[in-house]
Length: 118
Image (tube, rainbow, N blue to C red; front, side, top):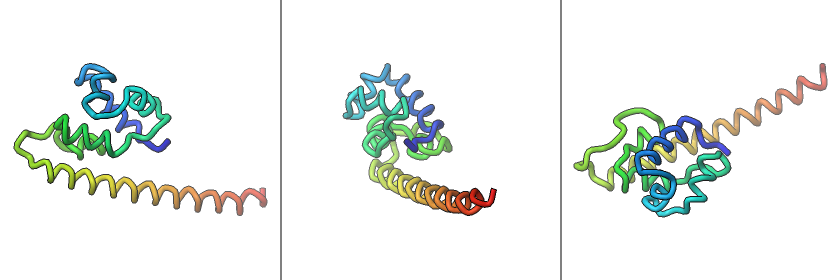
């Protein structure tokens, strides 16, 4: 899976603050087994969880996704703005993943060209 280890580290912090996987899962509206699969790397952290962490639990989208900025947002921030920030960051991540796949493909092609010569 492609979930960043640092994102998982931040997610573990949020889970601990919530009182464990079960309480976190309930707060996010997902199953505890999904949370466990995400933490083990068997499933990617999905938009539903990130949105819940930001919108329902009050964490900053920038912090949860990139580790930058304030950890939690103040209660004055508009929830529509949070959702917009999440969507922007999600798009940026999808673009980075696409770029990485492109680099990996180019690397494999170069490796195929070089390997027969060795």
